[in-house]
Amino acid sequence: MDAFVSVVSLGEYILVDAPQVNIQYTVLQQDGQSPELVEKMYLDRLLDFVYVELMRGLQKGYVPKRCANCGR
Image (tube, rainbow, N blue to C red; front, side, top):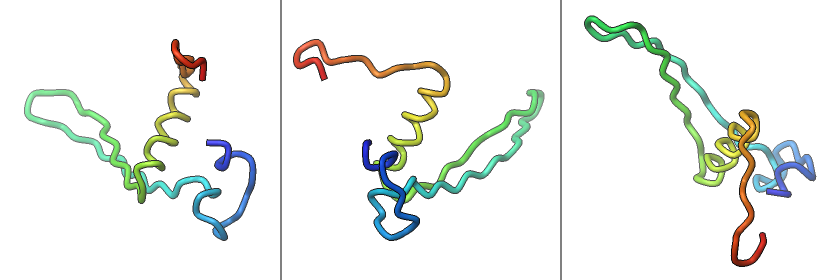
């Protein structure tokens, strides 16, 4: 994860750039139920998904725990 936050490449090196995320929001309403906001995300790589979800968790106050065996 250090590569995502330590250097800015602006398109020169894909492993350093922040993930390209296309997000689409849609309001769904089924019969007799209240409307629900649905989010679709389109990502190029699995690592991009992990990065986005990590950042969302950090924004909500969740912090990764240390491994009980190795301490990392």
